[in-house]
Length: 366
Image: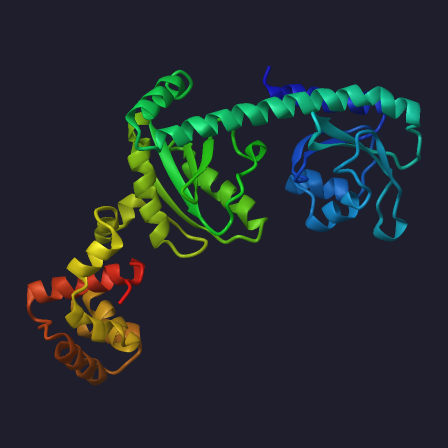
């Protein structure tokens, strides 16, 4: 039986013991398990079960009662104006750390202090299980981080340990945003490894589930008001390929727009971002004679659209919503600024590559 099953059993036992609907949430107010008892329900319990988390407003309301620091049962009175029933909170704590909350709806105030104390061992057992899973997931996260180092000995040790529990192929996903706090392991499938490395949220899962896992992780970060860019590389045929998979997924995330997920296979020429640092790419692919064009947004967009459309004048004019004669005038101006001929294949390649890479290169000091 898994620890999640054990937690479900604990919640059902609490519901039977206290004769009240029970809900177990983690410390971020995400649902872990729940058990009914009769038809008693209120909007907070409904939303927790339906959306698998409570709202920020509910969290603030309940934390005002000191539940995050409590070591024993906390009774929260009813609020008829908000249509909320009274409830009992059993803090799920271990070694001074709060891992979650075991909630019991008590609309008729039948749970007395003695009965609440009888249920505290269930909360303590839940804390043990949640702490153990958190520790196990943290340990796996550290092993994943070891795969990403450049030290062969550390990589080899991590590969040896992880090969006993993981089976290829793998997919590597990177989510990039301002938030650097670890993802809550309870809210990701158990088969997912996750860590933070060089500012990236990194997830390793199977290629079949990576899309779902990325969207789940993105939602967790959105709950922290963080928009993310995501990139995916798959498949990795072995644990030894995870580091390279991370670097490629990182490039894909770098080229994505906020809220978008890009795969390595979709990048085309942007894969060159993996091959060299920004300064080297800027020197080799964005020569100084193109800087004047790049500093003119309208002409740069015109050139990029024209080249993306393989030089199709009518299609380009339509995409830019301009007259064909206006387009011809702009193309002539582009040739003047760059000293390149748009009828020459090599010149077109040079310009197209520069226009493709330039938006993704960090500005270089002058």
